[in-house]
Length: 165
Image (cartoon, rainbow, N blue to C red; front, top):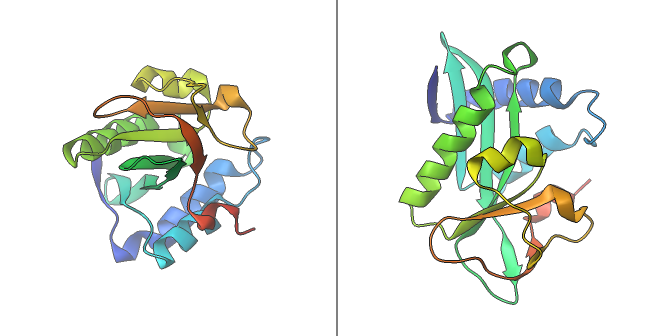
């Protein structure tokens, strides 16, 4: 498997994989592919990686800046992350998360937040941090990972692309 930055020719494959990965999931409102499209069109993705196997895109992960009020800089939101259904459970998603976090660390990012399944994301060091709040998300599903420096406190806001539907 190769993990590489997204290129212009990957957009349709990413859309199809994202739609398939989230189809029928009870925690999804089926907007993930549109979120990625909007982040891309508004030049708001800091990092967009694909996993490729034998020339086919099989997974994708996006990272975009978040705002933390009262004030924190260098924090990013992880997501959406998606893996083609026939490749799920084989480590593709984990490889994408690890590579993305490594790239953020090397770029000097302060930290990363996400809304997701603790059973999956805790293996990467994400933890529920009561000092960080994401309104509208059940606290047990909102997690943070400091990458350089310490944990901050405040209210997290994602890019408007996440709430446009």
